[in-house]
Image 1: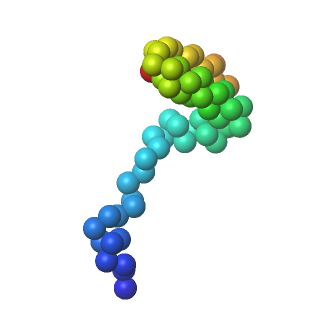
Image 2: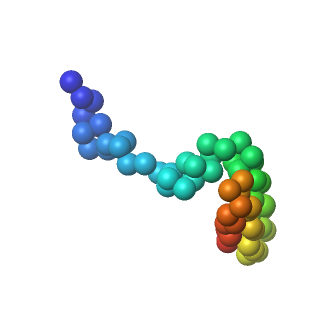
Length: 66
């Protein structure tokens, strides 16, 4: 029998995009991505805005902005 809450709050919704899953599956890409997010978090906490570029192992580049 399903838990009553499970029927109302189903957890089948994925919160990570496929792109982020791909990045997280590669240790080097994951490290670079998380470092960029940390830099942006520090900027945001300081009330600033900025952009970080992340170069992936497949030579693609992401631009993250806050």
